[in-house]
Image (cartoon, rainbow, N blue to C red; front, top):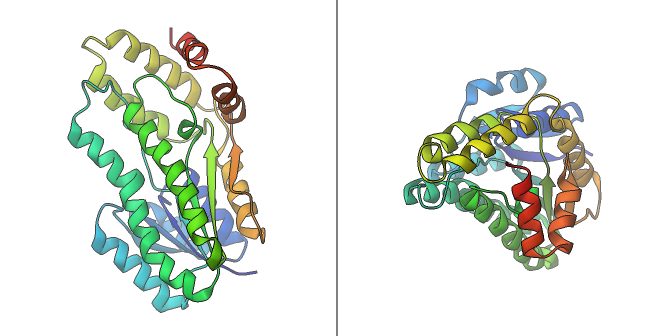
Length: 272
């Protein structure tokens, strides 16, 4: 059944691959990202690219109004836009930390706010939030990133029970290690922040471990997550959470059932 779908962060990685899949499945897909030129291929496939800076309210309003004007409804919102800043808490500026929250939480939240009146009017809809296994566990030098993903988990749980009476589902996707540009975007700024100061040793170890994890073949392909998202859209009553991708299930299991100290040791053993 054809759905009207908005997906953010659709210029690369999980967002782009998911958009490709959903377009090919016959849905009307509005793909949103800052780098609109990188979505030309999605337009050729039949998608509808729109430029969006998730930190700008005027861009968010334009996106929602445009889709409602063209389609008269919004069936699915996929909140995929996001990035990670890594570096020690001490050496990461509050400005950088604040932007991390603006993109990963507040922009996502604002877009959701503007979509919800239409979904309530329809008495149906799905909000799919792309979290991470990092929303359930933690890694060295990732305090600000993990803070946003932990926040997204709690925010989504609250949203789910608020929207239950309106027949709107809220779904969390918790990917593991996925082969995208995520690793490169994370590593270079981390080394710049913490590679030469008191945290240089751990920053070097994290860079080495991350390069190994995110290189081709080191993680799952984005299609693994795209398939999960497609499944959640197709189901009349999807799960509240889907865990998929390399290391996601074992890492979440370890964090859930081991104590803090033991989990700390396991995590640190991977970055020596």
